[in-house]
Image (cartoon, rainbow, N blue to C red; front, side):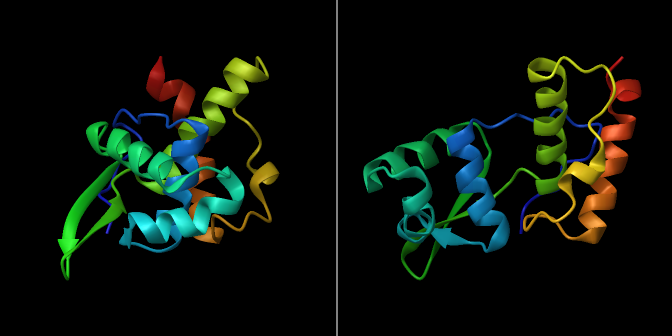
Length: 134
């Protein structure tokens, strides 16, 4: 299972491709590099070696953990989903949209990535973000 990252912990914001691999792992983990590649192949349209290199970089950045399972290396996300998504949303709101206020959580309603409980946690993280970072 992924290690917990709380709103007070620094969250490394993954690149778009790293986020694709994390989303795959948040849905099911642990997975082998081949299993991850097969799940993201249509989205990323790149080679298996690119998936492996990205996983290696993510391992160095401690975004994923690796362990041997039945003789196969498998990966698990170490970045907590809600905290990572909150960091992405905060960055998007500030850097891209030039907003001082947090993004409204209703823009995430209907997401296949988060359930109701995670949506509530995401909303709280976004609301608390400016106070926690200033």
